[in-house]
Image 1: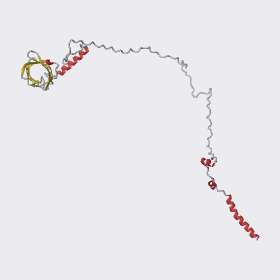
Image 2 (image 1 turned 45 degrees about the vertical axis):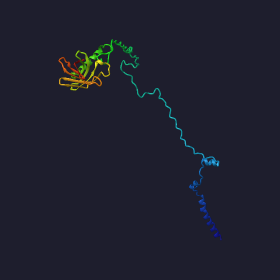
Image 3 (image 1 turned 60 degrees about the horizontal axis):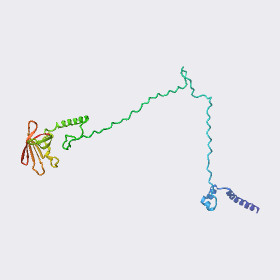
Image 4 (image 1 turned 60 degrees about the vertical axis):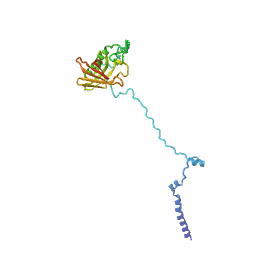
Length: 266
């Protein structure tokens, strides 16, 4: 009986020993999972509890100040020793100041004042100058520079005129008594073709007192020209032959009325 009681007590002790040892073992992972999560500010305000304080920010240790500069003592030897010059007569004293030479004042040149232009007095004409009088001018007599310029122009004109034909220029057709009948102007380029214009000096100022020649022909030594002196009138025909003095002579036919005429340079 005692043996059975002792055996039961031992068996009970063996069964209780593992349970006690199991209770003594602590599970760290389980403890972390069993912890409640930290509440944020909204949850803390809802529950009336203050939020958990934030962890402190780590601060670095303050830096030590740099060491103060200590100048070397005045008696310290220089790393670059300087030896006094040994040349005799050479002084280390500073040279005296010598001022720069002063340039004498030159006044600026006087400003250029152009001469005042004096307009010449207008010419005084005794008679009016007409437009057709191209060889005259209503201005004052020419000075030296203007005369030289006109001389060059006339020389150039003479050179160009030398390349033209013999009939090129102004001519005057006169009647038997020498009275002027018509002024003729021919354009002779020396190529055989002639052009020209006419003007009646007896009817100055009339709108129909001038015009172009209807035709100019040179047949051998003979010259023939035709034009219309009046609107609606028949054509006037001039037939001329050269003379020994450089003039031309012939007749003028104006609607069947024939007149002896001479043609000379104007």
